Image (cartoon, rainbow, N blue to C red; front, side, top):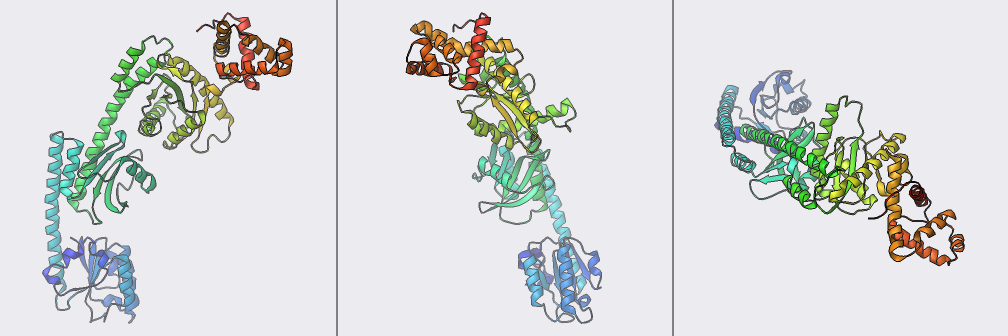
Length: 545
């Protein structure tokens, strides 16, 4: 029962609200009478306090005594004060009115001719009646949710049931699959809810929160897991306290939603297992499946493959408090789930999973430059509220030859890991250390597990296009490149050694740059060409495509 309902009782017919109208919705959980200076000690939250005003006299300083009592009752979250004016308190002072109004604390003038018992008994009777009604309604609520579970009804029907019980529009949000269910007209988009979660203060100890969004009032019951919000149940209504049965209904809806989230997690874990297996097959060097078979198998795990991908590997820098492989694995599984939710906004339709070393593996189909890709990955990692990541980016490869891009990403990841360890700031906040294989130079050889094979790969990448071009055009690009490197990139000396014009040398170097994506005039790229040429002379490497 609230103050408004209480003063509708017959015994309060001649009462008058003197101040604190904003608090008329305060709940009255009990009624108590104070007729001693220290009577406030036994007051508690929800008490409606009645008094003659005698305890406020305090050597005739009744205004000061009254203000002291008001401050104590407000601090104790009492629901209001009823006082008989005229006998000890001649009137309600203006400062008491201002204080009561500012704190939403109702002060009610009580009729002098009615005894305290005649006031308190009806209040208790009504409270007990209300409690009985609430018990009955709460029991009915539990029965309705029991039927919902028994009939295995879905989330949409859950939202409609809660709407029916509370007479308020309902929104249920599940972050796991970005699902929004409304019992009536759609009020919030997924973007709105995520922005709301980002901007508002909340904590896992405060599961129910009152808030206003876009001039709409709502009560939301957040659903947490490991202090992270996994969803919420929203009641859209103007500010008013929830009745006991409404709170029970909201809690029941949240519990059932949490069960649905767990069901989706279990299902997602099973599906992700199949996705990981398929991903490993894609990355396997011995993968000999045709394009048609790959695309058909991808449909079975709900992936729409593209023709080409670049592999991106990310790994988590292990914290010391993750003292077991199991805890680290659990952390990675949790982060993968968050990544799946966030990645759709940054890299739509991007397959993601774990490789054989439990590294986060993304297949990026867009041909984005390194800076843009790194920026988007940093945005993704910022959502994880975790620790330092390091990673590697492979080059674009056809879908049935992803092992090439995968091996490149592994090498780039190894280099970024070494760079991270050398950086004294890597433990400060969330950071990403990542290298793009296409930007590597001599590091490719130095950090490779098989430097000889990597050198042979350089021959194929750096020289095969040049040699094939020479055969097809009967040109002399390779000899020109050798002379250019021999003369340290000097165009004049190269031209003199070949008895051609230096502009011809420039023209041939431009062709080489177009064929290989390496710049012969760049010192680091010159080193790669030198290694490739040395390898070509030392080992029989096929340059035919």
